[in-house]
Length: 474
Image (cartoon, one colour):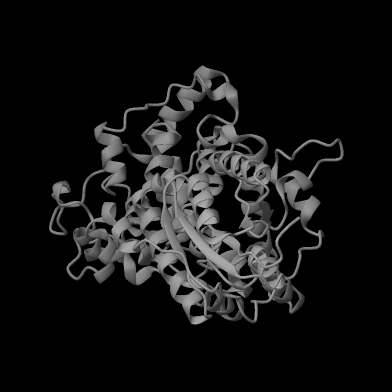
């Protein structure tokens, strides 16, 4: 029988908020003391430089937010199950609540934690909140999972999405708090080096900032979202991927805001809702086919002759934004300076790497995993495989984005390119110059360098890719 006075450990992971947090709300509704905890375990330790740094900022901000609500965030480092068992012993906690995650590593960890705690007589409960639709609840008419986005969208678009749960009026505190580690000792941003100073002004940190970002998007941008979202030279997207990745805002809140905008006749709202469902689709696939994270989703691509050497001159030029293809280079530099990249840019740089440079999508996936502050395991994997042609809903193998004509279409005045590329400009932008302050010194790059010629021209790369595809008889 559960002790109705013992504390509940609220295990925070990628749900760094107080509002619309089902696990937190359920814990508070019991009236029992709530112990918010964040554990730096091996999964968090293994994050790339930018995601790990951004997680550290988010955890620090959550701690301040909880303190303002009369609570605290206890920090511990170590294997999650061992840390939780130690905290239970220290505090007499009778329950552990957490929000579900869906990547294979988290599922394995959480399954072990739940089974072990329950066997020891400790209540262990997981809650939704990171997704609108649990992956196992959306099925085809024959009972299988969806492998194509459009039918998935049609299946869920009229499903009821739970409304956001209000922030608890108060968070019951324990009589005594367990010891907490010092976040500074974890050195979450060590791998960012000097890049952290450059990227930091672009971060929109925490729940309040995320809510403001959503409100601004709905009020000022969503009406033109269906067209402007493809224009990297315009403020045409929500920017919420950074906050959704760490759960500083819930998809439920975004969905209901999008529904209201659609009901008000704002033209791009339907497209925004589709993009939220695209994120859900990525998780749906990761749950049902976890191989999407590290292997070709379409397994007949396993023998495709991609280059797998990360140290070729072409790949190095791609990572450094020195391909000589302006759309590609501008997008790569945007990522290095802001920690994010416009979605149109993501498609172009991914297509260029996997098709023009004939290099494996895993090289790009790994680079993004290290550089993106909005890194998300499911979305990153599906995006790369979609662009490469090996994934679900993939572009046909014969579609090779031309980065030159794409620039003509989506950055016709070259505003985006001028903003991010400094070489050859008499008065380069501050953002373009800041790239050279963010990169590792050993790259030895300077804005006074001449801009390079293309390492692989658009037409040459297209022909090479098509020749390889035809040889494989796709």
